[in-house]
Amino acid sequence: MNPVYRHTFTDIFPNQDSNLSELLKVIPLDELKGLCIHLLALEYSGNTKYDVLDIMISDKNKDLREHLRERINQSEKLKRTQFPEINFTILDSVSLLRLLEQAYALGDYEVRKTNSYELDIFKAVLLMNEMENQKTDLVGSTIPITYTATPKINSLILTWALGQQELSNFHRKYWLTQSMIVQMIKFFILFEFIQDKFPELLSEFLKKFDAETPTHYFARYLGIIHFIFSPTIEDGTININVPVNKDYEANCNFIENFTLTDYDADIIDEEKKDFDVFRKKPLRKIETGKYQIIHPYFAIQKIFNSIYFELRELYVGLNIAVASPSNSRNKFRSSYTFEFSEKYLVYRTLEKVLSNSVDISLSGEFLSKKFNLQGEPDYYARSGNTIFLFESKDNLLSSTIKSSFNFEIISEQLDKILNRKEGLTQIISNIERVLLKKNPFDSCYDINTVQIYPILITHKSDFDVNGMNNHLQGLFKLKLDELKKNNFNVDRVAPLTIVNIDTLILHEFILSEKDMFYNMLRNYHNSVRSASQNLNWETSQNYAESFMFYLNNQGRIIEKSELSYNYLRKKLLNPLGDKLG
Image 1 (cartoon, rainbow, N blue to C red):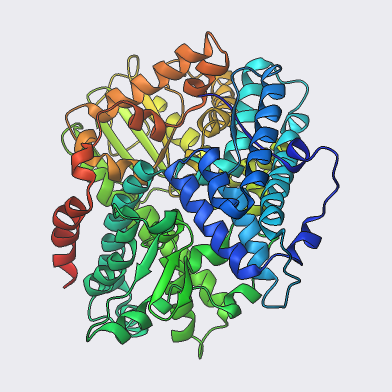
Image 2 (image 1 turned 180 degrees about the vertical axis):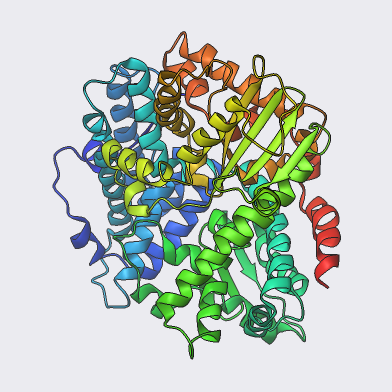
């Protein structure tokens, strides 16, 4: 994969000065919002830069359009003399979303619309690209000068990926389809849990959305997001036109729950840098009965990921008489991450993935209760003489950290999160128990030939970015070296593997084949090791890739024909939904 360069204002207008805040004063904000959403749809569908110019500059200004096209070609020709393999783009999801954020943050005020506003919008897009480029250009200066080539390359990839990869890679239609499958499955698993543990919360949720059951709610939301996969996308944007029938008013009221309002825009926090408002409200209202999807990725993530915030605030409301909002939020967060994410969801998933491959499979909850252990693995499994030690962490990296493009800051935060007692330290402790045969629940393995696979299960896409596994492997190896100094033979301990729970859920049918999970782990690390021995730009992609990307690239994934909208409805919605009414 060749590097991609975002065209900037300075590239196309080298002899001009401009200021984004001044430009926004003369651009009609409604047109800017609409065009940003239109361009996001084009970027999502992969249109070329020439399509973009045709969209941004109308035929009445075709001479200007051709002039800009010539400027772009000149800029690319000049840069290719230095970087012959580079690709170029005008459109970038992060830049466009930042510009859209600014348009909403300005609110409604009268602008001095000029005849050159098309050019002004084009300049605004390039200026935002320039701001993003300036941040990424500084990444290299944040890498310690003591790093050799291999860790330096990995650190560069990791730092860039945390700030860009979610929206640069995960928004493509194929990734969106995979994300949608996982979001659907997790939605129904979550509401099985909520129905059992928090029945009052379930009632409040259904009341808010005027739904009879979780399946009813989901079917209605599916009516929104199916437009993302519709073969007809009007003018490049993903439009939702509510049919005028007996349910028209009820359907509009439902959609309004996910529609950005002026009040929502008033609380945009640009310092958080994670587009929280668009994640919570991924739709824009054009007029009553007509809406646009701001970004397809956010609309799909709303199925499961963003629903946490809805449930949390409803939980706060239910407990307002007995606890402060802050305490209630913390309590719900604790229950959600520990009881649901790290236990209910992980246990259920691993039982299915490992069902045909292991001789012994034990949850951390079982080990704690049965053997009164402390610091036990979150999940333990053994197949013959191969042991899998799982630790689950439902942690967040703050948006400020991710968008800092500063490796030192990112590295420090990762160290804080994962070097706690429950993280890498606990994995090392359980490796020591295995090597000493101190586990009362399993001693049926040969200590001289045992293979140990330490696995960190994560719950956020932050930990799927390229470069993350190698970086955390570096932290893990430092701790493993401490065991080695204490005369433990760690030669048969495999490298740490970071596995997102979503990856296990998506590939459950494949990974549950006999020995498939073990084979994929082994092959993944062989691929990383092989790439590290001949490291260059091309091999660095294999060296730095996450386990998730590795699995997806193997081709042993759900057939594309099965990733259709109808497949999702028939194979996923009905069987899971039957449990929830």
